[in-house]
Length: 402
Image (cartoon, rainbow, N blue to C red; front, side, top):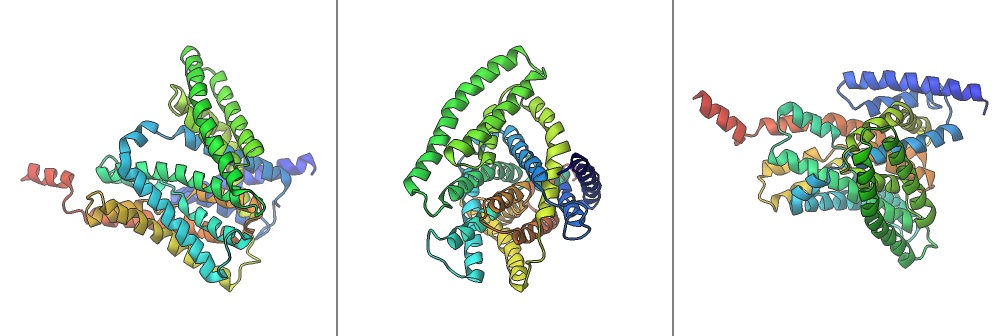
């Protein structure tokens, strides 16, 4: 590909991604929705200004690695410890129910297959896409209503963080078992070995990095060393353990999330990630989305996918919450707060496309889920919190006025 064509494609991608992202924000939708739609418009589906190519694909891969690294940096380990068993169990069931629900949905529409076949792993992978929660929109809504620091708000936040960690681990196992010729014990052993090594080496790396960071705080070398660790972890995970590179990048972020300059590193990474590589990734989703293979069965699947993905979170997270003495209304709030899907769902789908597990037509269902959940969740949360008659804050205000 000629260099000037690359420059033209990048110029089109950046200006369209930014414009569509700002328009989406004006409509109170996530910017990612606008960036995906920009890819649909400028790609082969409509205008054909930009076509998918190796350069865009490689840029997008770097983008997704940086996104997951940033997600790891933003993980609050102290908050995870405080959340305790309740948030952990809510997150576990909040992953399990969508995983099973998505798998059954695929099998009910396209037929049941024997364990270990390609179709079986395709069904399980569809369930994997449903597992991860994108809590960004929920957090903004809770902040707006002043409910983020309530018991329900903190439970949603903590469960969503744990949810993402478990979702990445589940994805790692599914991708490891995808190869029908793979040895089950070997795959499991390699995954567990990687996690153990990450824990042991992570402690050592954290202490070394903390020692260096304390003496050279807020210097440009700090984010450079951090991003080097991110790429090394991503490479080692994929190359030597057969684990998705995004898992290695995510763990690298978790290793550094408690150093003094974690926020500083995240800001610096965002300059390159969210301003340059990440828009290419989200636009590339739109570029790769193919509506030519969308038939009646895919339309039925997409509608079912959205319904199952949203209800499975409400049912799974909501019912488990009841075990910890939440009211039924609070259980609904927690379930509704976990409904939104975003970047991680796209990342998982993109990984499946790259490995040949699914084809590009399934992006239709995922994009529809992100758009619908992004619109429905804020509305449902505001309705549910509006029905809170026993809200302590309201009670106090009422008492003061009287």
